[in-house]
Image 1 (tube, rainbow, N blue to C red):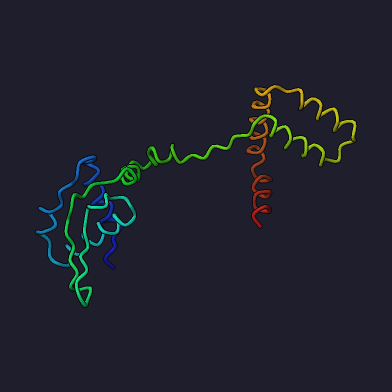
Image 2 (cartoon, rainbow, N blue to C red):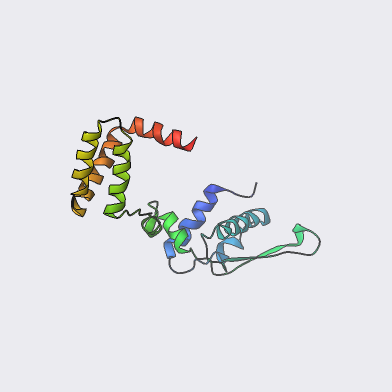
Length: 169
């Protein structure tokens, strides 16, 4: 198979060393035997297809009749921001920008908690006392309570995982 993970990493490391500038592979590639050159081209094209390289890094010109008549031409082989983040091994800024934040308004969260309290088997008087206390909490107190609830979930991870699994089934 032409695709080679070790070769892909070597190619990307070379491009990372000159990022944000392009890396000139021409002096190396054109000294290779045909099969090795074809392998480098195929791997560069593969990386470009996954948007790790700029779109004009390598061109495939399909030949008439058969794949053997196709040729590759090098362009400006340069990593994209996605490629640079991949090489950073920490996700880079993409990991930071890709974070999903879920926000609840305090009133929305109170409503969710109230429904959970109502679903318990506590006596009605205890439910009413809890709900009244919940309604009197400030936004900052709700934020603190939310943190405590999340911490409790993490402290009981086994139960939390079973709940998640049952909701996915």
